[in-house]
Image (cartoon, rainbow, N blue to C red; front, side):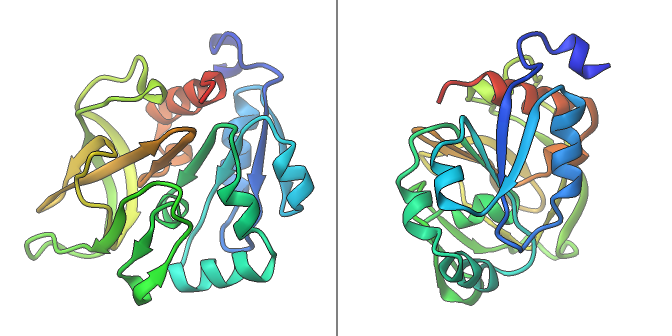
Amino acid sequence: MPSQQAGGVNGAKVTIIDTQCANLASVRYAFERLGASVTLSNDPRVIEQSERLILPGVGSANAAMAKISELGLADTLTSLTQPVMGICLGMQLMTKRSDEGRQDCLGLIPTEVVEFEPAGLPLPQMGWNTIKDLEHPVFAGIEDGSYVYFVHGYCAPISDYTVASSDYGQRFSAAIAYNNFIGLQFHPEKSAAVGEQILTNFLRWQG
């Protein structure tokens, strides 16, 4: 089982930030399979005291940022110093701004999200695609060209903060990072063994 093979992560603690804009069950199960202790919370005090955090998200940037504001989490999220991983919309919320609804975001990673224009291919991109140019500790042991699972209609362009890229009619950031923040455009919890390794690496990463 992954929890036996992923030495050093049994008992690791991770908090999934409950913004009420995501189905958290699959993310929670993925970490529990690795032997991690998982907490779900939108309590600022719990979040501030957590060892490491996941910011998930589905739906629109507007709705997610409105919920973050309603829950009083914006200041908490922008002050975090522990390792934080954003997944899919959670990654996009880490940027300064999204073209989706012309929405200001959290500004944790100084890049932006733009409308995806993949040369006439269907949107959203939904399914397996490869990642390459891997330049972050969460990709330790992952080979260029590995497949992961995407569902998205907006993207972060290639920038100084790109730590993995992909191509779907246009090249875009599959992952972005800055200091203790790492954002993944794809879903590691749906990406089989590659995703398990990425989550394992995150549980080991010290930020």
